[in-house]
Length: 105
Image 1 (tube, rainbow, N blue to C red):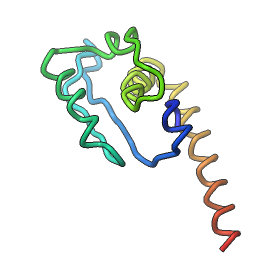
Image 2 (image 1 turned 180 degrees about the vertical axis):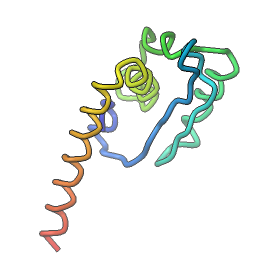
Image 3 (image 1 turned 135 degrees about the horizontal axis):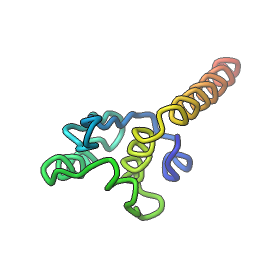
Image 4 (image 1 turned 180 degrees about the horizontal axis):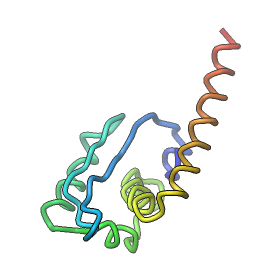
């Protein structure tokens, strides 16, 4: 988990922004996981308002809310190489945690 709330509660899920590469305008949001139904409404507003990933990158979100994931997704859109490294690290950490859980069984 990359957002603070995710680190605290360790939920599983995914948020993906679909955007026009040339303008950064958000044209869609994919989200799954716990509380996705509560978070998709913000994504719908971003699409409706014609917001861009740059707008999200400069937004400030309250601590310990899942809405911070939108900013993390926007940062990933603007820094693809860094996002790849963070996803690889998160995947490795998840695999390590799962191995520990399986070893306990």
